[in-house]
Length: 180
Image (cartoon, rainbow, N blue to C red):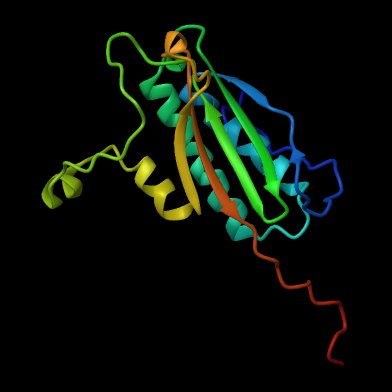
């Protein structure tokens, strides 16, 4: 029995980007072992977007993986029965919006997603963790967090960590026999 998931063959023909495009939301158990499925499902969804460069696709997948891991590590999503929701949409024809929604703050360590700015250079060099949001900050066009429900009495019900990426047109594929 293999523990590595089989890659799924894409079953849709890619279509051009357009404003208002939405992919179906996906729900995963809040277990780090599910990260491979999160990446594979996202790759399959991104395959449906015509003209998306391989580099940008890999960047979006890396950011989603970091966001998913943070949700499992720092929220109730990582507890028994926890879950994580992934959304993907296009608010404009050139912007890809990715969000990971967790189950809310843990009662033992209630924290909000943030980059740890208080570290010294030596602490950064020795740190084994805490670089995920820093990676996202450098790779995404913009990113942030927001509560799932924006009412004071609903605080702690969940946090959405989102990142946006700007699509750049890819060069058309060279045709066979061109330049002969």
